[in-house]
Image 1: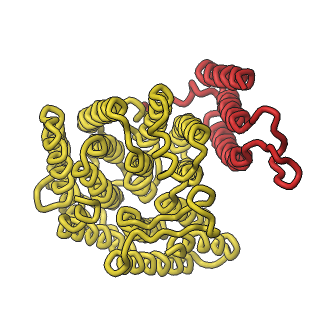
Image 2: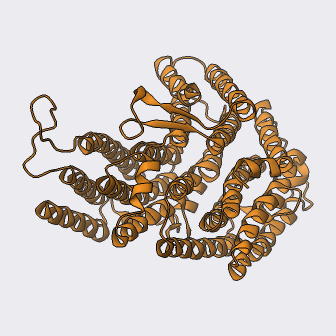
Image 3: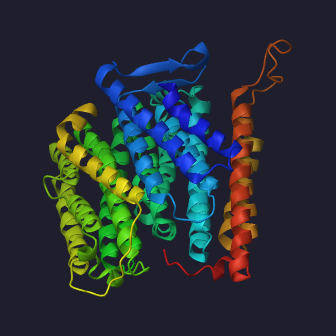
Length: 465
Length: 110
């Protein structure tokens, strides 16, 4: 199982050594790795008794680093590997020169993501989050246009300040408990005096939520996600911003919070989540650039996940399921928007007029994903939002749970607006041939959406409902 | 311990104030580095035990916590990587705008 984590790093090193090879070679090598990882994850989800626990170097949990492969982790590895396969297929052949650096960055990113998922060590978690962040800064600036550089440096300053906060709180946890293992440290940390816990959790929440792009600290997100190239936007919006929320989930799951502290954390998460949902949807409605609109929609979806993380097990499972669904749906939206925008070489929504009729495959993908984002029943977005809402209702948080249908109504407004523009009549569009790899990428994402929709109860049961 | 803690706080405040007040991107990056150094100082000073020696198990019976020193090394590397990427971004931005002021970065509105 450890090889699943290490394989992308090995490929990245190989790319660095043999960088003169053709691009197709890297794509083949990477795809084989991804497919092997996907098969392996499926196999262990079905046949192995999870969690599998590795003690690196045979040290005990209090001295060494422990890797844990549980249901959540393996599912995330599965989803990330399939999305990375789709993203590499989509990005292939977009630039003329040999961009082995791009492949290297992507592979190291996958290594850091998988390493983050399996590690049960606080400092390891921080290091992997930092690797992911640094690579995200580089990927945003990869096109080297003025907008992308500006967005990247904004992202860098915000991200660095949040990492400093996270590092300080990890150090406080280590000094006060003497542990770095998440399970042991968080269990001991719950017995400390309340002021220490309040300060530490406050810094953790600020750091992680601003890295995730939750509402008051969201200003870097639309810039960064709209200025990067389309595949990278899908990667950042679909996977990277969820990472810090998943870390928060990991820390909260292993700590036994005191009632007073638990109450305050829940309140903070609920308020920030609801604020993100409403602000994200409202601002998305006003956007004229399709990628900025999708980025603001990401803020809203982050809000749903934060709200889900706050309460019971049911809503937490819903939040985890929503991270997967949103990863597939947002990737689908970015891919199809990128394909449709090729007809006029502009990302303005108005210039997409009529492209939906010209390219039925991309527009079908866009429609399905948009309906999923809104939350129309057979598609996966509905099941996860419903699970979050059920969890909130079970805790008597009726007023807060009404934010979710409100968000659905707001989302309907702008997605229907775009769909009407897409399927408008317009004749004079140039004929563009897309490469076969783009079709593979689109069908992979479509397959992901369909399978997560069909197996909704199964996935929710994996997360413990 | 309180002495170093005060130093950490002073460094943090200097860094944050410098980050807020400056518009020169180079100075902002320097402020970021100062904040990072404050955290590193916090890590090393937190591991200190009064009267204890260096963490060499054969020589010193009574030694300081060696773990944060290892963590600090990693954090230094991470900080260096972040600074390197920030500086390279500033060079690229200078090629586009002929200025290193953050006030000229107004193309995107957040």
